[in-house]
Image (cartoon, rainbow, N blue to C red):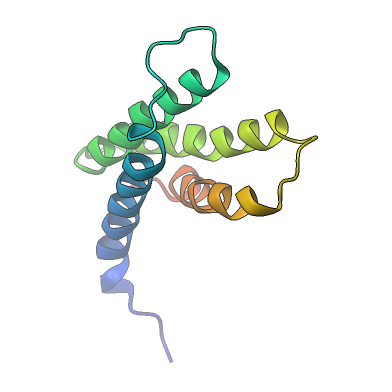
Length: 113
């Protein structure tokens, strides 16, 4: 059976919307305020900025913004894993896997056109 290539664009937009919703649920609602000395503030702010850029990049013809956003959305969970490494990672690994996977997809595929 051949893959349904016509659905690739719809799948990419569904993934963008999923990332945007995920970031809203996990990082915007728990935004720690403007504590500039906190590591989580910078992580949450970066997730918010790059999730919006990922959606905006989908409307652009050139994939530069999408690739850059995908790269940072891929790197941010890795930074979180490294930052929380000595602690028990079991419950949070799945939480980091969704943005890591989606970020890697957009980093490698761009807008998919």
